[in-house]
Image (tube, rainbow over all chains, first blue to last red; front, side, top):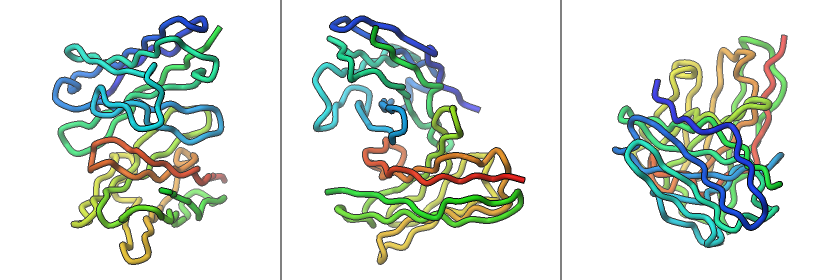
Length: 107
Length: 119
């Protein structure tokens, strides 16, 4: 089955930049989406269609893609950004797939 | 304000059944695809099923196809997930979510309802 691979963890100091990658063979053919999930809470959409930011999401969140990899970048990381982040896409059969998740730790 | 509220979770023995509901408000329910996503304890997110807004076309992950049925009542603004032949590995928090468009990301999520399958 189709898989999206993320690094298990990323650590960053406040004010620095966090980059979270997501790799998958079908990513060149499908949009990517990113979600933030804090403990005990439902996920929140932070990036859609690769680079778009929903209303209410801070400008420090941005998305990009290159080939089979998409990247979520958090510029000027704040303590409140500590959370689990998941990428998501769809496959050609008509199914969603989530990435393995990345725990962002703010040092 | 857009709002999704799940209900129907609980404890069930292997082989049993449960029906989850998701009450929607604040948007034109019939115009949007809807999805169920689950999260097992300490694990990541797993897509379970989606249903289109108007035609009611349905889609399932392989592990639940034939056991789970997604449906919707556009008059009651409610999404359902009928879960039969439940297994221990179905234990999870189940979230309903509103799709921006079918297979184009989920922009609104409920708070989830917990399903525990135990023997």
